[in-house]
Length: 215
Image 1 (cartoon, rainbow, N blue to C red):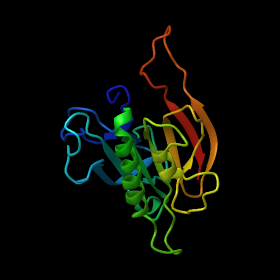
Image 2: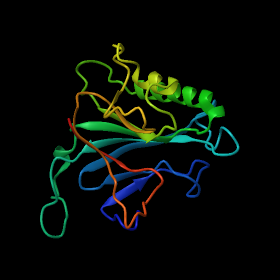
Image 3: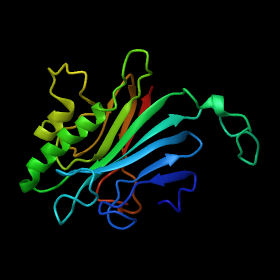
C-alpha cells in the first residue's frame, strides 16, 4: 500500500517491535498534515513494553498528533514557500488512534480492559483549560465486538450517557465490529462501507469504512 500511495507517509511499528508482524499503521497525507507526535502502546498490563501481552497475537495501539497545514503547495515543483512557519504554528491539531482488539470468546475480558486503557490514554490528552484549543480525537480499528457490548460501552456509553469524556460513533450499526469513533466539535457529513471489489475479489475480509467529518 505504501508503494502505491507515495503522497502518504506511513507511521507505526510491528506489534512485537520492528517492521515485521501486524501493524496498526496510520497513513498521513503529506500535503494536508504535519506529524507532531507519534507513539504506540501495548494492550497489556505493561503498555510501554513492546510485544507484551499474550504470547500469540499481542495487540497494540498506534497514535499520532497531527496539525493541519493551512496552505497548499505553490508551483509545479510542489515545494512550499520559504517562509511558511506561520501557516502551521497554532493551527488546528487532532489526534488519531488506530487499534485491533483481541478476538475470540475467551478474550472478552481483554477487550474490556483494552477499552479502559485506551479511554484513559485519550483522556490524558485533554486540554488543560478553556484557553487551550480543543484537539479532536479519532479512534478507529477492528474491535472484534459489536456496539452495545461491554468494551463498546466503556468507550461510548449508552443512550443515556452524559459523560463528556466518552466518544461518539460516526455511525452505529449493531452488526459491525469496525468503527470510527470520535470526540470533539465535529459533525459527521458522510458514512460509507466501501463495497469495492474486482469480480467478487475483495482487498480484505473487512470492508473499509469511509467517513467525512467537518471540524
